[in-house]
Length: 331
Image (cartoon, rainbow, N blue to C red):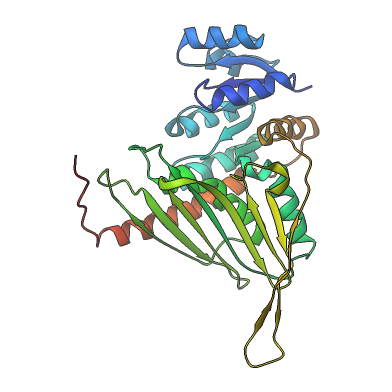
């Protein structure tokens, strides 16, 4: 059974550590705050250690990383150089050049590099993607994802980088290709230079298109992925409170016998999926890939593709924001 050390016991890192411990894979916890590391280790029944100790330990096979995003590259690179398999929370790095270096390093060291694009391991998304790949929707024409809520406002990154990576990962997985064109528009309302609403559009070589809308000034929480096919449509609404109604199938069709297509509506069907915790699935997948020397669903190359789209969207966003006047809000 693979032994894994976890780095970064913060807001999200503690959830990763908990799942690894419950699965029996957690060996040690690393945190820059020694007291926090000791407390976490005691609660989880493992050892508190420094990063250097973990990297030097021959009985630790892999390292999971949930340190601040600006540290992802340095921590992942150090772990790979030490011969450890690596699971790093999104984003893989803040620069595509750094992500490319990590992918090359993983290949050189023959180590697994996995990125934490959590929704790829959500059982409902897995089912949705399976239905798409089996052709149940026909050719996918369009897909869009909304990830919006009221807060939490950030100043170190805009809403595109904060919210969109998971959605971009899902959409790239559905179309199975990188977009040929990426554009983005947004709005800055409160913190100068930090967009709090962004919509990114993508067009794919195969003819499909998609968009992602992100916002932290939305009146309610909305997490919805909609896929439009020639034969049917699917909606994955993760923010829906009822699990059994999170995945909806609409077998809407189109009568194209006349000069104008006429929609043929059908009743909604609820697609049933066994309940499971996505993060536990993700953590188990990392351990399984180590044990079987397998390529993760969200390997380094997948993380790099998402970063390339993010970088293109950010460039387009900044070009559009340059033509907008920042007014700010009244105190």
